[in-house]
Image 1: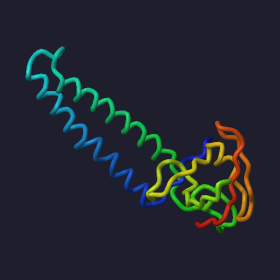
Image 2: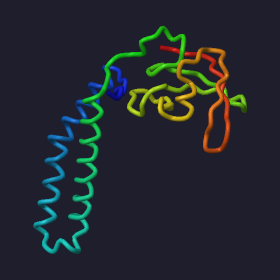
Image 3: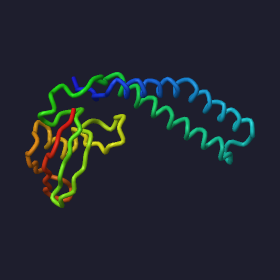
Length: 154
C-alpha cells in the first residue's frame, strides 16, 4: 500500500472544510450559473455558459483531488526527534552558491507558507535519512547539485 500524505491536524481540517464547501455551496453556485446562462438562449455563442462549464470541470477536479488526498492522508507530525530528514520536518539547506533556505519536507499540501521539498523529488529522495552536517549530492535536470543540511526542525 502506498504511504499517504502526512498532514497536520490543522491542514487535514482545513482541506476537509474546503471539500465540504465545494461539494455543497460550490456545486450549487456553478449549477445556478449554468442554468442562468442556459436561459439566455443559444449555447454555441454563450461565453458565460462555456465559462461556467469550465469552472464546473475545475471544481469537480478539485473535489476528486481532495477526496483522494483525504482518503489516504496520515494525520500527525514527523515521528523522529528531528535527527534526520523525514516527512514532516523543516530543513534548512545551503546550496553551492552559499544561499541558505528553509523548506518543509512534505507533500505540496501543507499549511505553511514555506517552500516545499517533495519526498518523491530528486532532492527529496537524496535527503531522506540524512542528518545535520551532511552534504547531499543529487541528480537534477541541470546536472549534479549538492546541498548541505544546516538544521532540521520537527
